[in-house]
Amino acid sequence: MGLEITVGVLAGETDEEETADLREELDGLSAALAGTGVQWREPDAPPVHTSRAPLLGFPYSWLHELRRVYALDRQDLPITPRGERGMTSRDRDAIDDEASMLDSHLLCHSDCEGYYVPVAFDEPLFLPSDAGVAGGGMVGSSQGLLDELRGCAPALGITLDGGELSDDEARRVGDLPETDPFMVEASVWLTLHEACRASIAGGHAIVFQ
Image 1 (spheres, rainbow, N blue to C red):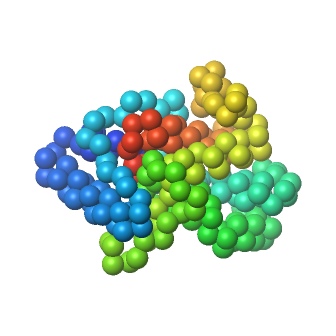
Image 2 (cartoon, helix red, strand yellow):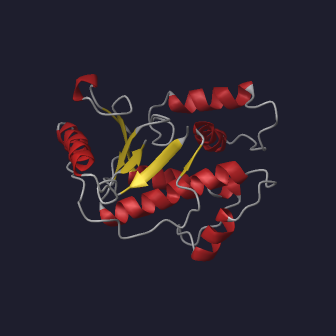
Image 3 (cartoon, rainbow, N blue to C red):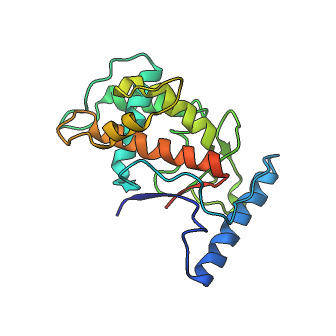
């Protein structure tokens, strides 16, 4: 089992009953967001961008590796490769401290389900439990997540040109060998970056499932 990241979930579904169920879920998300003043609805059209990332999913634990780098970078702490023994108490404290601020779209989101929507809002939304939105009601902004990814890119050795990821750099990151000390974190970064890019361009939600 692992995390699958989808953009344009309706466009990729061929089963009519499953499509109807997905539309109902997304319309429920739209209605819940409207209650907070956020206007958005999932398009039926397919995404306008395809992903340049070789991975569309990964083990759940990999997401925490990127979160570790992001949190350490935010606290101006040294960013070293994770050792064989796993995260240190320093790593866990940094993640917990940053997540407690409730302002990070990367940190304040379910590991295994939920949504990012292509609407720019400063902090992640915490919808009421009775809204029935997957992921505990935590909804992030695709624009907000993209900003955070751009911010921690240098810590992973990822080069952006005016904030944009070139095709050559996307290819380089996607081809990192397993021996690279930050291969896991960079691979997750690229998958999320490409999901944000497609989400914002086409108006689709990023779906964690």
